[in-house]
Image (cartoon, rainbow, N blue to C red; front, side, top):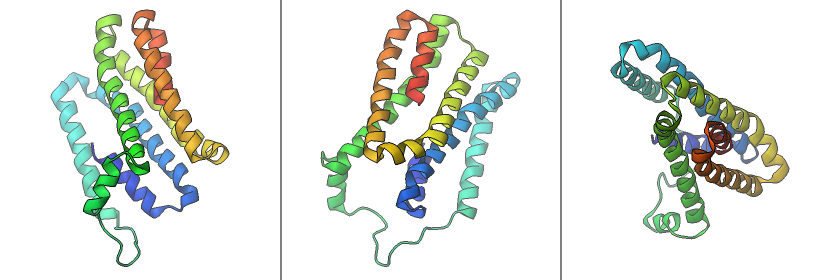
Length: 201
């Protein structure tokens, strides 16, 4: 679960500032591709049971770790640069200053997305009788939305709107999607799917 933060930090180290938003967007698109490929792989492994899918996921994670250790190199840093935050920097990161607010906002958005990702299969099964294959298609749809927005729209929008406004638009869109998702429980599956698309974008 910590690999996304490490990947974002690595990308920030190896890209120029003007290319960074697009590169982070491509990372998001690769995560979206996982949402597309993962359910398909899960459906393929379904005849062998949940344990087989779990072992396969663990094997993929292990292969990723070996690939990273073998291929990725420590990015160049200025001589004497710190490799980690000093004690006083922790209070800046966890406080309510500019960096702290940004980190807390990122934490809140990630927590909200993971909560939806975790709760939707349970709600889908209970309210609309969505089973494994149906939920696989739902998460594939989420993946396609993520690929389109993160891979194709983030870079151009960041150049047009600026980084700050672009981030604000994304946060507001996600908040609206979460509010609609709450209403969608009573309004039906299609409203919930539209809200899920807005949250994913």
